Image (cartoon, rainbow, N blue to C red; front, side):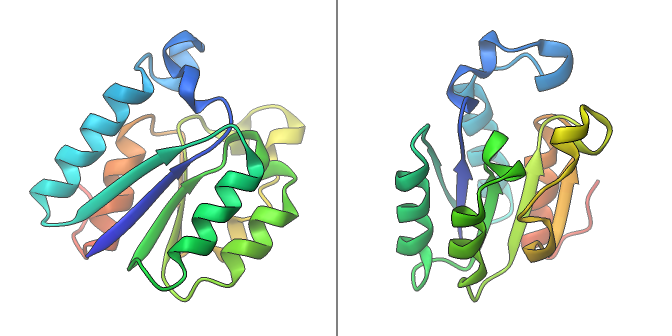
Length: 144
C-alpha cells in the first residue's frame, strides 16, 4: 500500500509552535515517526510539506493515479481552502484528515474544516499519534 502524507502551511515550524497544542516535536521527528509506523505495517509512506497552496494542490493532482490513500493535514488551509477541497474531491482513494490539535474545540474559526466531509476518517487532537492512527486505519488494523 502506497500512502501519501501531505502536511500544509506552518507545519515546517512545528518545533517552534506551542508544544502543549502541537506536541513539541519538529517536522523531521514527526516524519521519522510516520515512516516507522508505516514500515511496521508494511505500508509505504511518502511525506511532503509545503507552505505553498498551489504546490499542495499539485501534489494532490499527482496522487490521482499513483497512491492507494492520502493522509492530509492542510493546517490553516483546512478552514477555508475550497481549492484544496476540490482537488481532494477528485481522488478515488481513501482520505484521512489529521490535525495535531483538537480543532473542533479551539477558536471558532478553526472549528470548520472544508475537507472533513471527504474524509473516510478524521483524527483530531491526538498529537503525532494521530498519524499512527491514520496509518493503522488505512492498513486495516484496529488502533491501539
